[in-house]
Image 1 (cartoon, rainbow, N blue to C red):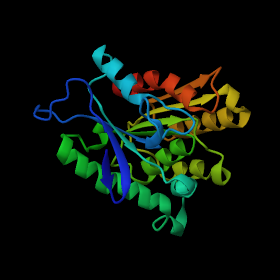
Image 2: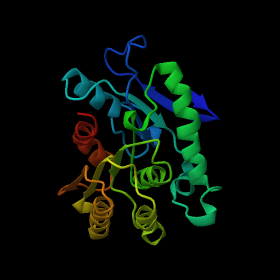
Image 3: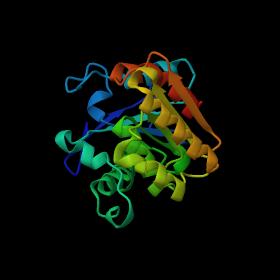
Length: 237
């Protein structure tokens, strides 16, 4: 556990981690850090058990060793911090401050301490629901900082689908790998919006985009945890 500007940052090191190895480690930054780790007492709605999933995939040789970084949300302030802001409001918004926290303070600090990659190809950003939405905003506004995106059940509907308008003006990094998914049991609006998102990404030239429509998926941590192994294989294998 770390603290950066009063924010809890949760870190999981993969099996065989060696700070002295020649090549720095790729890093996966996930939002809503309270919900990521196995047996996490602060989890609300359940845990993704992302640390156990990464360990199993690394041990099996399916993905390379990846360092997991979970950034805690602000509780009652979560929606405001993850909501997309555009136009003149964007620079001074809570979402811009959150992106700056992740890209300009958390990653540089941990990069030096834990021997992490901080280049776009070495950094993956991801989350679910509003966490998926803020992932897209960060990738659009700071495409030079992340080229691997995990977007689960994104809240595309927020702000009258403002994220789609933003992405049409500000594409994500060329050649970015983008995982998008949605659960059929989340409702027709959710998966239709996810399809629209994929259409926008592919239309702007993001060819490495993988979309999964989960026939039994609902809007829950357990659904996202179940899809996590496939998402990690796509992003890192």
